[in-house]
Image (cartoon, rainbow, N blue to C red):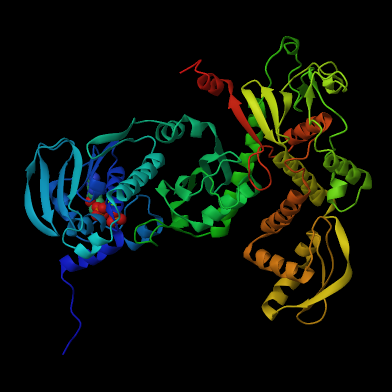
Length: 618
Ligand SMILES: Nc1ncnc2c1ncn2[C@@H]1O[C@H](COP(=O)(O)OP(=O)(O)OP(=O)(O)O)[C@@H](O)[C@H]1O
Ligand SMILES: [Mg+2]
């Protein structure tokens, strides 16, 4: 007896719905995508009880005539592709002809639609996949879809839904994605009869981000405009170095206008940020990648959330490069913003000087004896400096002494250190003092700047070491006893092929018989107790990194780790000349605003914020 049966159309639709319609947010997504594909200028969305009770999407797009409206509810009915070859280069958001019949099979569904020129429109009602009514309707041109009682006929699916609040938040996120992806389209979202937002048409991406996430966020974003290769354009905004989030919720990526999730791209973004991103944190991106539709396969995920690139490594490299260049460019803009207050003597300033100038308040004085100097690179690189060690011992022996004093006649006035007389040109910062032996307080044109001296010193040392590594190669230190270690054949092949990369990173490694290697030197800034174990870790990490850029990055990571141990600690009191030098060196860095682990080095508190706090301004 035959056991195989063809499923009825209704059951087949429900099965398909299981893939495409996971939750109310998927309904909202599919309906809004249809409106966008229909050329809508305005899309109004309303939800009730987390979208479980109602999701309604109204658009002013092209609408459908009665035949098309009926056909749109058949499975595999689409106006967007015709042949298999169209599937190779999809230019619309939809292409499967599956969303409407799937949604209609698991809800109480009502569609009204009218073409612009038609006298009458069409109204169709479907309940749980069963066509219940077709008649003329008199709505405005465009399409309105109402989806009520989602999963009412599939209690098992309904049980999987989360709380109304969570489902609402998912829908809001979905609509945010669509609204950011299409700033030129007007959107409004109503939740349980309350307007959550109403976004005007013809906005720029910047306006849209401001309207949805606030002006404060927009201020901390940098514009991306890279065309890293003729085949791929990258635009949008990314968070400046130091800006990060605990979740991926603001890591938005669009490929040809479609919001996607991609581990390839998030990996590339992370690599582009590298030390500008805190460990375990996520960057903020509104990244728009445009490439030939033929170079992306969109037909790889049931909810169209993922895509596959024909040339994944090309896309990856383009994104890495674009992020790096954007962050570098942001540095110049950033310095511009941090200009000092204009004082009478600075008005005659000679413009065009790039190096930041610093002054210290004449009334600030610094005791000499209780402060130590910044450790220099030689110490970091392993060359001991006994004099310096002694100085820090003095600090520890005299904890009771005041760390800094103001207007103290006995100490050398800091005026001797300041550059105002020597270089009256451009002032960018004025150092006010040091708070709690850790935070350098400075004034600039915007107000107050606080610098974390430990983070600042880490950044300075890190960039200095990296520069050395690039120019002269990594300084190495011979091991007292060369060590040999065995690896499995696959790793051995890999090491053989990458010997030169390892050597460039300062690892003296050579082949020592089949499957055996010898290490006789390591980078001198590293403090490694077990060379073999260290090597195994490096090899694992390197194997995971796919190209040469990553090998250099790995070298940088080793530097970042060692730098942290050598940088001035929070409680190390510094003499003012050292503070001044530290700030000057920091401002000369490529990425001055965060330490190599991505923590911020400085925080700006604007005069406006202070005025608000003191109630001068509301
Ligand atoms: N809001 C709308 N305005 C005008 N036409 C629409 C609208 N929504 C759907 N349609 C028409 O109905 C068809 C079927 O829509 P449906 O969402 O089911 O499939 P699709 O968008 O073609 O593909 P996918 O299943 O990938 O979304 C569309 O191809 C389109 O022609
Ligand atoms: Mg669709």
